[in-house]
Image (cartoon, rainbow, N blue to C red; front, side, top):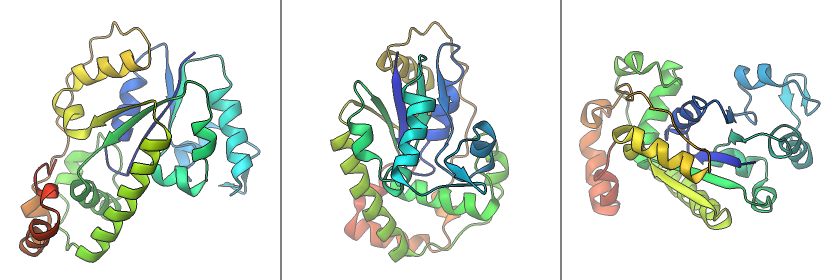
Length: 235
């Protein structure tokens, strides 16, 4: 049986991929069971929860993953963000699971950071709610905070990719623009026969970076001087 995780940073397309995989009748990908959101609490009531919260203990989380994900007799996976992998200190455990497959979704750091800010401001996380997102107010970007965010997550990304080497890396832009092609490749990677004809992806909110960042000129200058690659794929 195929065992896998979907990972990436916040607002990188991980949820979209999870929901797309769950369109297949022969496989299931659980949501962020290691998060504190209501969806996760409702799906499983486990002894690792106490008073509605996860017990912050590495062995409890590993026990949970074993029982519900990796020791089952089904094609099963779970969405775990990179931040959660380090928060719960489970990278070593994941690296020792035989034949575990990793699907890594990557997005431009600046684009995902702005999307994260706007999502937090508007309390919108679902991939189906981007119409509301497009009406949200532009934001003032704290450049130093963004650079700190980028460096932290870049380091964590590189560690995860190195340690969990049986991986398939997807670019967010490719997932949006070549949805059908990418989804068939995903199921090939998972070794799950795919006979589905995936529906075209609905247009997701693709923000206009110049309009969404109030201090865009300052941000652009800073990025151009130090990180010009971030200006090449703002999707």
